[in-house]
Length: 138
View 1 (tube, rainbow, N blue to C red):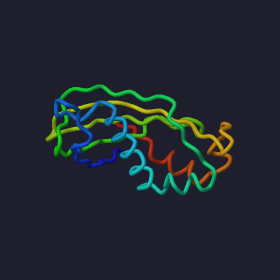
View 2 (tube, one colour):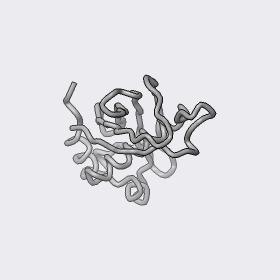
View 3 (cartoon, one colour):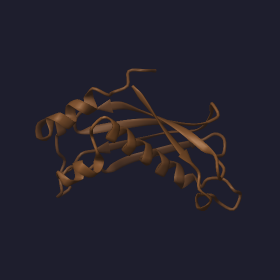
């Protein structure tokens, strides 16, 4: 399963060249991940209230064509790995069908004391929702 998140670039996100600054791609990926998770019943804000913290342990972006102020990127997100302790997302940002950037993030689950937790054991419903939405597409 993949999910599409649309994001229009703001002026303040651009650099002196008028291009969305590279650091903002990771923010766009995060926005897409949060929207995807909410769409499958894993609202990150609610999960945090329940004591589930989801730190980012790896992030990568590859820039192919620039996103400019006012451009609306379509960010496709796929959950490609989920073990109950670790999850990985892959992202493809497109402008008019052309790939602008690709990337991935990896996350783990910890409790409010930042100790690792197994989502399967502590929160089986969230575990099932994520497990049911792993992308098997190539």
